[in-house]
Figure 1 (cartoon, rainbow, N blue to C red):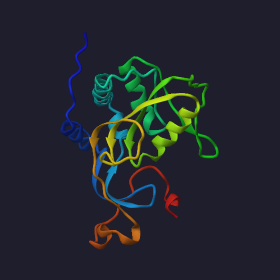
Figure 2 (cartoon, rainbow, N blue to C red):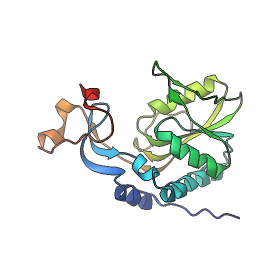
Figure 3 (cartoon, rainbow, N blue to C red):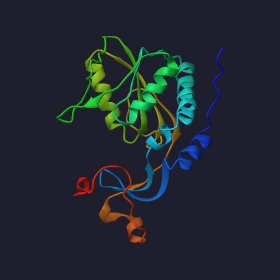
Length: 203
């Protein structure tokens, strides 16, 4: 019998900070907004020794809630790794959605959903809930039942507008500002543009 040990939020936060996956300062986000917090879970998830215990804790919480999914769906790109590992921990298949040429979320690569299939959506970070709801609508239109979303970080601190349960290991409070009304800019704190999008994304 496998015994799952809990992963305290404080421990996860320390690990994220240590891996430079959770940064505090003055950042320009891919949306163009400024923020005092930046999250890049890929730096955490590159470590299987860290990703596996985190996914195990999410799986434990899902089981304790009495939820029994048939499949885990992780939206590309951020949900692919955590979705795979969560599916492994739950003993079910793991697939992912991705955007088509028109920017619409879809299933490709021969992935299918059967009517009545029970789904957990896996995310690395829930930022606003918008993309999570987009995936949920897609799967619901295919006849799936969305049981919950499970993520490492909930950047909304529980305020995401979701119509299903939201399991998150770490709530993070992050302030965002319009570039022309940013107190960090007014304070003279240099802005950093992390991430991988080119500068033209902000033009």
